Image (cartoon, rainbow, N blue to C red; front, top):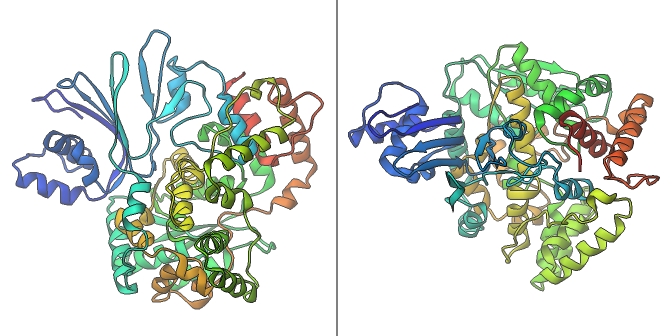
Length: 543
């Protein structure tokens, strides 16, 4: 979209959910509109406020703005990086950008090789997504919450306009809201994301996050046609269908059952990896792929999803040990023992994640020594990885409460970025749009202000969110322990001959690409080996 008066041209991918309110504000300032779309709101907002439009936006976006007044192109990405934005330079100095690293590579950007550091960190740590980089050497991403100005000689300016670390420092443990206020904030987030002129549905696992979203959708519109989609594995303990179907019936939703299979996974793997543009460390990515495929078959274009709740509300059981370590570090051994006792009495005490707890709790010199130790354990690494840098996958440390450190690490680097990549690429592969109410800035603010610790002391993850959910959902959902979240029967699949055969071929390919030393086995997850080998093969990437 172009503005004739200024010569500014805008191209963007995403949705601005509060475009109605922004348009009203801009009209009050004398701006005139020719369309009713959010794209024009973003354009007129940029003309009015410059980069100041981005903090005003509630949404997900990757935007490119060609501004002749500045002699360059402004590239910007949303707060959490829900939408991708890659860029790289060609040998002749031209800068290309796009929503896929492979597209930028086709334009001639990058070296044409795989990024050895990314490959090493993925195999060692399962670090599937660096929100500032890619697996294609020489092709990077605009960081979430950043904008860059690109001129003839490349990037001439880069600014951080929002950051999770700064937001957490401001909000952490500040003023926990009452359940009524939390519910109102979440409902408002859902209402904004229901703005659409196409059929809207939801993915539904039967857990608290997606069920809460469904309840909010129904409260907003008692008569709306709602379709929900659930990945199911009949006869397995991890099957979610019965629970999800009961929630769907409670809210009058049309439930769709999807049954992913190993055969389907293996047949789809090349296409799945190609659409992902990167490897993955769990076959749950394929379960989500199947959900999006079914949504496309049902004609549901927009889906609301519960993603982001675990990283912002403290939903992973591993955080129990962060709470224990935090208490120990401040000298409160009584509190630490009480947390352990509470979770053990509920028969729900997880095994400690020593690597991540240590990574956040140890001082920088100790973390460096630990990384050197891990590097020496990688005797299987081939010549292509020997000089590759081993980075800290948790990112920069804030200092202060360990639970806050975990929130920033997992929300900004360790977990959420990879889940956002999986979700965006899976949904867009089927021309579906996934919207995430839990990543609304006001909702995230309430999540971080809770501080998490009280819940772990009482024996529950996400306790404030459970209190909200209890107002609409049955106890079997609200106070359920354990979670599956697209989990597949991995052990059963790994035992199948066809998968073992394909895994052997994948490891051999990694040896050929000098990633694994000849004659050495690869002591990492089978899914890492399978998906990485497929990525290298699909895109012809070598050392």
